[in-house]
Image (tube, rainbow, N blue to C red):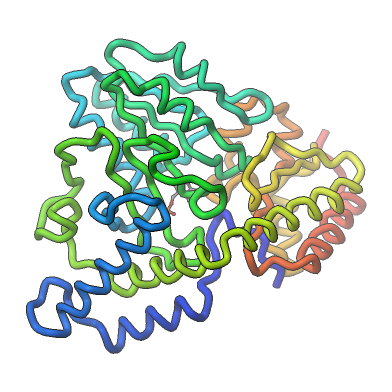
Amino acid sequence: MHYLDHAATTPVPAAVAAVMTEVLTQSYGNPSAQYALGRQARDLVERSRGTIARALACRPEQVVFTSCGTEGDNWAIRAALYQNRRVGKHIITTAAEHSAVLQCLKKLEQEGYAVTYLKPDGMGRIAPRQVEDALRADTALVSVMLVNNETGVRFPVEEIAALLKNRDTLLHTDAVQGFLKLPFTAQSLGADYITLSAHKIGGPKGTGALYTGGRTKNVQPMFYGGGQEAGLRPGTEPTAQIAGFAKAVELRMETLEETRRHLAACRAYALERLGAIPDLQTVGAGDAPHILSVSLPGYPSQNIVSELSEKDICISAGSACHRGRASHVLTAMGLDKKTAAGTVRISFGPETSPADIDALYDALLAHKNTRFPML
Ligand code: PLP
């Protein structure tokens, strides 16, 4: 198997699975229980929070565990709008956000909010100037992702934060694809809310975290129930997932520079090998070391993905979330129809080897040589 879809999800290392098994079978107490088993579980949650906080260089109480990146995005947006309900009902975002942000904003439009969608340029980039020009007196929130999940392009979150410094407008960033891939801290980004997800960095699916810092005040929960997570996120803590998340972060932190170099080397090697395929184009000015977007113009990406799948090679068509529909990101970038239709996303992890990339090269070349392009 050649797994080249780490931006979709990642394998859980054995050490992470071992920690999770231990929690599920031995340290399974409810963190709210008063006896020793419960206190042990509480400790585990708090130690895990400390680990995530260290990775963001923030205070532990600024980290709240969620069920996933999607929840973090929805919650941050709703909480920011509640805090700024007197500022107004205008939101600025980009047309290239993940659907966890875009679908939430679509719903908010139905509820009476006005949303400005900034268009990326042909290389997938967003300029701070676009945000500056879109700001209005009633802009309550700017939500701009750190790394685009389809192109790997990094958006200028720090510069946007600087623009908002003297305003009430809050800043949320979906850092799901940037976390432990590109260097940043909560402070260096300057965002008020930062969304993270565990399963993109070797953690389990079903958990994530939301950083609530900066100028956030009186953060409102999304759900109502027990007093877990300081009353901000009720529901019995999924202790195995949380511990697995923290273990994955710990492992990635220990090997951060080495992994970054490895991912960048994989990307460079893939660029070099795939670059030899006639007509193959790179898509976007990707900055993230783990994502490479390329197109075989005219060769529908769904066909490429299914043919490669028969050879045990896993890549995704634009974005794993679209399932056959034209990608909103590539459409917003203004890519012509053939280039957009032929775009695939290749993404790397610590486990990726040159042999995976060689297999991808052979399979893509064979596809190109044996299929007819669309007219
Ligand atoms: N945001 C981005 C940029 C993503 O890539 C993803 C996952 O694909 C998400 C949010 C959603 O995260 P989760 O799968 O944890 O809900």
